[in-house]
Length: 115
Length: 113
Image 1 (cartoon, rainbow over the protein chains, first blue to last red):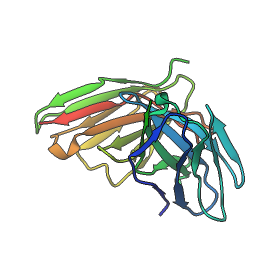
Image 2 (spheres, chains in turn green, yellow):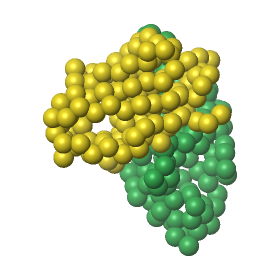
Image 3 (tube, rainbow over the protein chains, first blue to last red):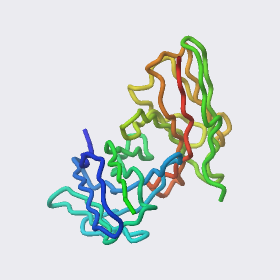
């Protein structure tokens, strides 16, 4: 079945450092790919999305490119802030036979940013 | 757009008790999803509704679990005879028909003692 694998955390960075969180996926067809973020004590928020190969999703300085040849969707940010400390989930959409979609998530990567 | 809301936010119960959670989706969203998230893991799909019809259930959803969406608006998730292994965050999400992007609520954290 479809699955998502992301790098284990925690990832600890100093403020203004460059961030990469690796994500690879296994899927049949052409699913949409997502990054969600979960801040402490809050629910999941959609960070960015890409719907087809070579699409780049971007939001709040984060970006990720849908790479079909390497089945990857790595998250990057050029300069992290303390406020970016959160858990980041890579995910893909899987259409059930009945219509609609379900989201398949990776295990999450916790990011700590130090001042 | 007030977002997806879930109640209660926290529930502590004793093993063997029944619990019910409520989810209010974004008002114009036809599809509603339930997920379960255990500590250190990503959310796992449980079930989803299109309007009032429950169209798919995961194998994770044992016969102690039941979900309803009687009028195609809010949904409830009931767990009967709770077990300690049911302790988790239960997340609700909704989406319009035309997209695969889901919008998540804050979750209900269940602790079974």
